[in-house]
Image (cartoon, one colour):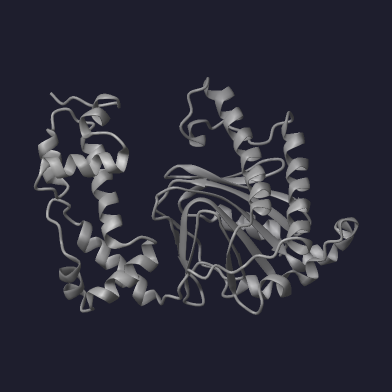
Length: 357
């Protein structure tokens, strides 16, 4: 099966999205917000633009190791947020902002987005199709038959920090599509847009400026792979530990224990005892999964909850402080100011609030 047909089938099968085909692209509008748009650019090369707002995205069951069997490689750039998955090889892997993965692995059943928002670019390479149509890239001296050897180095997944030259090209790809999306949505909804799902008439590719968009994406793709093959070497990120699914599960359970009731702080040692591990082990697992230590994570959760509660003028600052685990209003106000750069009252006064009867 050709890569385009394979990806159409997969996107159409997303249980949390609504699939549509258009003249030069195909896409899925995600139920929780945002969309995934795929552009076939060359034989064997499909570019995917991702801007979504779920905490997790379920994927249909895949044929085991189908990417390896079909000689397909995924290049995935995280522009913002964080994407996690447990792979068919039972590996826990993730990429965060300004990292890139090159992989032949698939998610077992879902992707997780801890920040509840994610943006990025993913490029699918069907090496056999590209080589079969090799004359396309001969003028640019790009040999895709050597791509896997150059970047995979015998691994299923390589994760790297993104060099500036590469990041600039990927960001140009992302922004070119984003500008097109926002322009179309603004025209269709009179400038008041929160989601592509607002308009059933929304088209990513009309007969207007989209004739410029796709050629631009092709030029940027050629430039990207020329850099990767001749000018830029990706260095594997050393900060990504290898984690087993069981260790990830322990970290998730710890997070649930610690955040169940923010008004009643739970110590790390208490959470560790409930899980039957040491506090040191819990801290290590937690940091490796959430990319921040427990105290940083809990402060973030408390401040986010407080900012939501401040929208309701009927709730006092003292009550909010107590609701997020502070016994002292003064300590809460100081922590809030350190986090948001302003006091709770200023935050409330200069933002949209609700008043309950």
